[in-house]
Image 1 (cartoon, protein in one colour):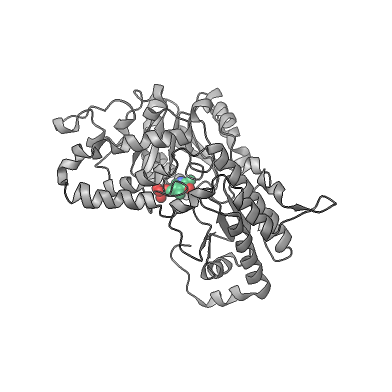
Image 2: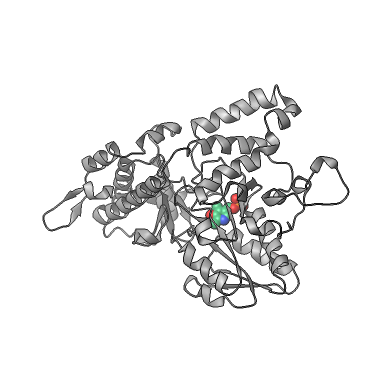
Length: 424
Ligand SMILES: *Cc1c(COP(=O)(O)O)cnc(C)c1O
């Protein structure tokens, strides 16, 4: 692994240096990909796990959609530019990134809406089983959507349990286990194969939320025999703010799963304009309304960046970046009030790292002011994302140097006087 290139002192204690970080950047097989992105000068962007940056390809693809397809093609572009086929075209590209077959994925709506739609459809299929199981502290929308669903459907019960006990909730009344593969706060990562197998053992369906995994962690939904999945495209996939989300349904389940929200775009023949609903074949039936083409165009451009990228190299670099960050914080910020909130073992974490700090909000505001963009997650977490497509090892070095300075000088304290931002 690339971190081994750092200077090793005689007793085995490793000291990282700026020149070792520069050498790692020179040797990085993915280094050319940074050129694909427009990252502002002087900005160290460590929030690609929340909103990926603009790529040149996404910019060009949106420009073409506006200037040629919309301005000139007008409504003809649904056919001539195949706007109508865009959701499944994007789905096929995402399928490679999650280890699924191209016809098992489509793109639509938001992760929240897709989660509702799939979970509700699954509950109908799984009757008389009535229980949904999920993790306490799962991403809020997952908890809220499942709670709302359980209150909407008679007899359905939602059980939440702490991470270490969640699998104990599985029983022969469980319809569905819903988990987020990489936790949005801690970055702790489940063993997808093992957990999916546990759900299967009791006859429950497995629904993974892949929002913090896709584009950073290689996945094989096929190998794990996952039933259902949803995920975001505006994080590591760089699809743009509020970009449409994806839906995965394993091939053999597609004909059995009737969408909860049966919209006209999921109809077998939308332009027959029939009074009665007849679901389309395959995953396409989980479309609801008219796809937002501008958002999809941005996503199409951003997915081109992944073409030909070896996902194992991506993961290797992600692990090297997060490992370097954790080791550098240990080296440079000892005794400065930071407490690691992410697994130290790289095999059990995704591509971000979180630290607790009692004034985490103000520290992050000061970091942002100084050009190091991460984010804050209540009540006390500083969160730093290390997207391997464009983050350099020197970025990690510089970010830690600035963090050290902020903590030693206490310059973050001036942020107490500022009103809290709406989005943290
Ligand atoms: C970011 C994220 C979401 C976001 O859902 P939206 O509907 O796009 O707002 C959902 N689930 C997880 C686990 C996330 O990390």
